[in-house]
Image (tube, rainbow, N blue to C red; front, side, top):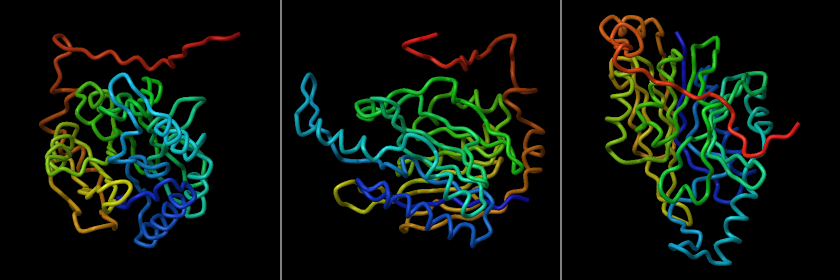
Length: 288
């Protein structure tokens, strides 16, 4: 049995230190509730500036928009160090969304942190959605993996990556058991997507959505949920503000669910369909 917690909360706009303090606060609450794995929303550290346009129209950028982007980029993290410190302080596995800065490019990233604070891996969003492409670069297949943990095999698909069938299949093919879906998609349709993925992948789905009241960023109205491998909702969807969802997961239920469906095994047709996943790092410049 594994006890997990999904956090529904919002970032502190423009204040990375404030968002890290919130990460620590909600991790404390989750550990107090007995959680061994805690999942945070998309872009929790660094923030999701919903509603801002950064001064962009087709063919034009404004000076004010450039200054706003620079301010946003200044709040990104360059590594998982400060997030890992929170995991180590509480001795818990964390799956935490953050904006990552590499050179002149930002990525929407999920970090996997061990209880000792070291990074077990990360996943960069491979396809930012719509206006997100003005802010974030696209990740490559090198971070499209599953992390082996004592709690089970943990993977993540961020927000609308969950609508990419090939990406989901890549995670299923790696035996994901705890499928994390950090998001800011607060629409009612998100629940049906999470239930479908749980049934399709025969895995537990843990979706953490931000909650932001109307203001400079937002609003974002939640909908976090935990679903079992047969599509049954174990907790949520949460629509009444910030808070925790906690559930005890029996991983043996995955094997039971695979009795009649395994989309990368006995229910597959590799003679008809096959997916190739390029896991190589893609670099624009190679040096000796």
